[in-house]
Amino acid sequence: MPVVGGDSGVTTGTSSRRRFLKWGLSATAVVVAGGAAGVELVAHGVLPGQHLLYVIDGACSVALPPESFDPEGSTYLGSFFSQARNTRVGYTLAYPPGHDKGSELPLVVYLHGWGGNHLSSYGGLTLARALALRSATGEHLPMAMICADGGRGYWHAHPGDDPMSMLVDELIPLCRRLGLGSSPQKIGMTGISMGGYGAILVAEKHPELVSAVAAISPAVWTTWPQAHNANPTAYTSAADFAANNVVAHTSALAGIGVRVASGVLDPFHPGVEALVHALPHGAVVDFSKGCHTGPFFAAQVPPSLGYLSRHLIS
Image (cartoon, rainbow, N blue to C red; front, side):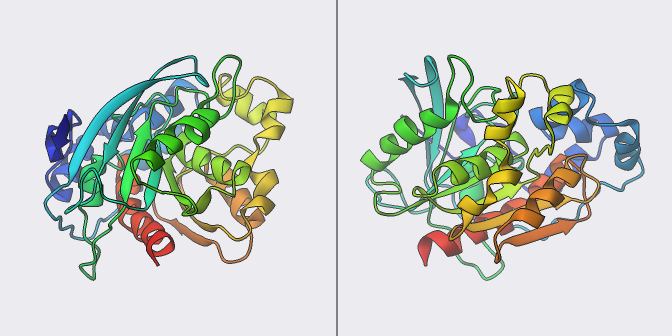
């Protein structure tokens, strides 16, 4: 059964003001509002005391332009048994305003952050509400968006669990059977933190599938010791890190639209800088005030969706 708008079981604010009031309660609230991505940073010691001071003194505050929304499209919750992940995988599929099942539309795959799942918000918004967001010019974003359970394995294969194969061999074909992102049309990828990293990784591994990527605050490490010390579950070995190091394989992104956004006070920012230096010519980069927190994520949702829209609909 479809779940329309805010009845999807995902908590979402009805305005940007409400979202920012919620995030402004305390330093801890701001970190938690970043979702599981923020919890990951705290749990693994990536968030240093200095970063919490940034939150407390307002250095992580990010202004969000006024938002307006159209009536939300329908949301469908479903699941399937994933051979690639050896478990049942839930998914959330959202349609833009004025569209529903039967509509043939471009497709955006949203990858959640560490500890998240298919119900995770996109910068504080449900997928349907994000798709109902209107740009400054009043343009709609007629794209469908889907998010599926990817576990905590940084969207690449681990023993007995391969979330990337789940995406490529199971989830995207499911969407195409519904008329979404149908071949030869390519797919848009987006994500936050671990999901931002994963969106770039999928594009590098499967450039034949992806037209554009919009990564928000991607969780990028530049060395195996750095990654292993911060999160021992992200990669199984130094060889695994090398094989899935997005900085080292950016040549595969030639011909793919790439947008990367990172707050300059984000603990992952040095890794993102290394990534940006390696990106092919033409990538869009937004390095601006902000941290690895909810306010920065929220501010990057409108330009990220606009970027994907321009690449998938033109």
